[in-house]
Length: 216
Ligand code: ADP
Ligand code: MG
Image 1 (spheres, rainbow, N blue to C red):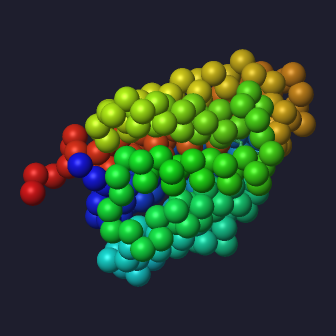
Image 2 (cartoon, rainbow, N blue to C red):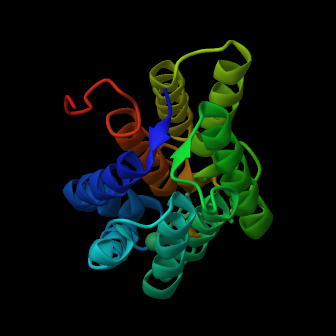
């Protein structure tokens, strides 16, 4: 089993859909501890990505991810845009020229993506940011590779770890980003960026795995 180029295209489209559906939810979360724009930011960015879908539909996986990263960088402002832009650009570097990915390839790409976010934003685990969803997801993928799990199992484990990481942001006091300006008042609210990261990884479970893949 591998992740195919067309699965990646489906993941990007499913991500755009889920971010659009959750636009108000993400905005509500950002209204509590930020400036109420995370839903609009992510939706705008991924709509711009989808407007280029014809351009990248038949390209290699690296080119697809680079297009996503560049588009997010140029259309999404704030903290989230550059961080997600970096995330996808890094994925693109690791998957350059590839038309399919093994679970190891996917894990290597996600590792570079998460490292890119950490380098750029300097957030550590527990700072109440997207890193709190992404790092546990990466660890779950690494463990799945070690245990020779299937791609489906690995993607499920990663999404589950991201979900737990996202939920664990609620009691935390933010130490990075806009929410950190609130100090202790940021506690009691789930982090918007951790939530969008979870949504992306959740969308991966039913597009990159074989579970709900249309029969061929
Ligand atoms: P802004 O905060 O500029 O309005 P968004 O609302 O789009 O940008 O994104 C906010 C999210 O960005 C936060 O919920 C958090 O997860 C993430 N974030 C902010 N700063 C950092 C950082 N330094 N490192 C990682 N993630 C960060
Ligand atoms: Mg915001």
